[in-house]
Image (spheres, rainbow, N blue to C red):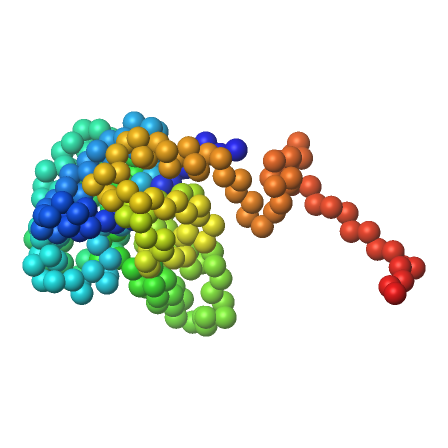
Length: 258
């Protein structure tokens, strides 16, 4: 069985529906969701997780009403201004992945500053995905590889080489992806990196997803058998050298059918 995942990814969904259920504006739900980021980061750090990646704002979220987008940008800037000192003191490293070019210069500058201030931390690696899309990530990686190898063709590009140019190139792929809010889809998040990730969906809206709910998700993950194409028996009964036994191929020359 598994222990805690090294890398947990979370799609923080349901802020607006949380607010609507309480007859509040959607922006209030986003504010409560931003406050919950602090609690979950602390809980993940206390539980000993090494990598936590949070989907904060997708490349498709620009389609939302302008006032909601503006509120989300404001909350992002507020988080960076209010939390970085505490993250630094706790030994948590903060990084942001996604296309920053669409952000206001002040927000871009604050992101850079937050990353620099926590760059030497060796505890939890906290990654915020903002203006991020999995398709954008893969396309950007292909273009970056081609730019680095102008004399080669895409026939020379393999999976390992592409992964080295993804925005998460220095992170392990997530073993567990949690999505709150009752939806059961990945929504263009870490498409390449979640090829073999365990997917956990909960009806809890993000503002209600507390440390106990996180513990429940991790307990669910601990019961999963991660096969990677093998059988349960191969995974649960590896050979002493750590390899998985493969059945001998028996060929019967005189076998007749019919």
